[in-house]
Amino acid sequence: MRFLGEPIEFEKQPGIGSPVWLGRAGSGEALQAFAVAVHRADGRLAALWGSDERRRSGCFRVHCVFGFSAGHAWLSLDLPAENPVYPDLAGIFPAANRMQRATRDLVGIATAGGDQRPWLRHGAWPADWFPLRHDAGEGEGFPNAPSDYEFVQVGGEGAHEIPVGPIHAGIIEPGHFRFSVIGERVLRLEQRLGYQHKGVEKLFIGKNLAEGARLAGRISGDSTCAYAWAYASAVEAACGASPPPRALGLRALMLERERVANHLGDLGALGNDAALAFGFSQFMRLKEDWLRLNAALFGHRFMMDRIVPGGTALDLEAPALRAIAEQCEAIGREVKALGKIYDEHAGLQDRFLTTGAIDAELARELSLTGVAARATGLILDARAHRQGYTPPPPWAMLGVRPATDERGDVAARAAVRFAEIVESLRLLRELAAGLPDSEVCVEVPPAPGGDGLGVIEGWRGEVLVGVALDGEGRLARVHPHDPSWQAWPALEHAVMRDIVPDFPLINKSFNLSYSGADL
Image 1 (cartoon, one colour):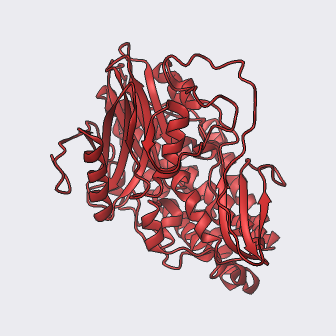
Image 2 (spheres, rainbow, N blue to C red; image 1 turned 90 degrees about the vertical axis):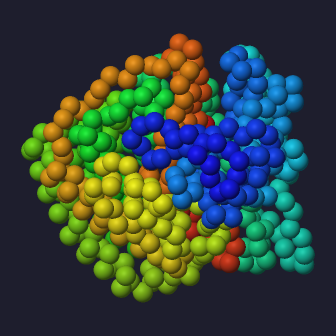
Image 3 (cartoon, rainbow, N blue to C red; image 1 turned 180 degrees about the vertical axis):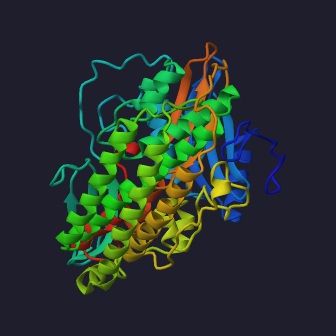
């Protein structure tokens, strides 16, 4: 099948997940032309990564995943081993910039032109060593030589810089923020991330499917269910397996509980950043109750290792499902009361309204997904019928109602979180009352040479995992993609019309993952 008038043939990925179309570009020009066509069709760049295929095909390969009306187009381009160069896509999709630089740091395939600054390599390894190449070795013994970074300079009378981080007050992840300001007014913000590179993508290489599932669930602790489901979906597509209906219901139940837990925490933290300690304490109390029920029913507060390739590692009996439904009723009443307090609190609304605003045009240009995109009016939700395709099971039968708000500011991102909690509680009650009867897990025999892509609507946005198996059915390459890749640049824009003291509140309203974009 062809899309958008471009002469590239695509085949649909087997399986029951979100529709994924697999295609191979014959040249860099063809890849670039398809990217332009996706952009003109209001599509987005969902992910970009590279792989070393010299053992299998004698080449390197760059992988681009585009989100568009028919699902996700996974387009690959083979690159010669001697000179692995491909066209710079950042002029079409600005979100490509950091992904391309990270791909060069890890695999050594580069764009022809464009921004050549390193992104993940901070001096811990030399510029001519690429950790994800087959012949890279373990990379031990390199001197740690922190490198300088060429921030964009802002000049003019009265302009000066405020460097913040990478070490921050409190226990948060490291990241450097370079503010260019006049007085307190922010002219420009430039981020430098990549301070906690852990080599997770290298750790996947050579593991079996079960070992890979445990690692995928630990990519980002607040999104363990989203990553575990995306990984499982990719493996099932690669191996031609389909999870049972009850397992899909249980996965959805866990994903919605993860969404509610994070939204409860974020709403409390937003209240705290606007000096409403009452809101912080109340939402943290609700979140703690929520996580304790997770621990009681799933054996883990974050439900880690409960979603596995082939289905789920546990089932829930009727008393457990009743406890979930009863908790949804109780939490729903309290969230409604707290929502009224937030809406009517003049001081809180004064801080929230018009602060950190972005609009739908910018969100679309940056390929933004998730809460931040829906808070600008974009209806992007892989669980909902608002796409150009029927959402995968079990979402199609549940009739997910995506939450949106067109203001694009901190108030909008808070309002979307309130609305999504309400919708998730409804979904949880329906799931608890209507789980189909079936087994909860099937065997997934490894398929040597297979590959697959999983796409899941996590609480922060669209989570993707690409998987490729080697000739023995073990993991040859795994690329997890966090929605924070696209959202960090949006944060740079959101702060530009505000003052430096508003940055912590704006940053919290996005609540992005440093670690998830630094694997």
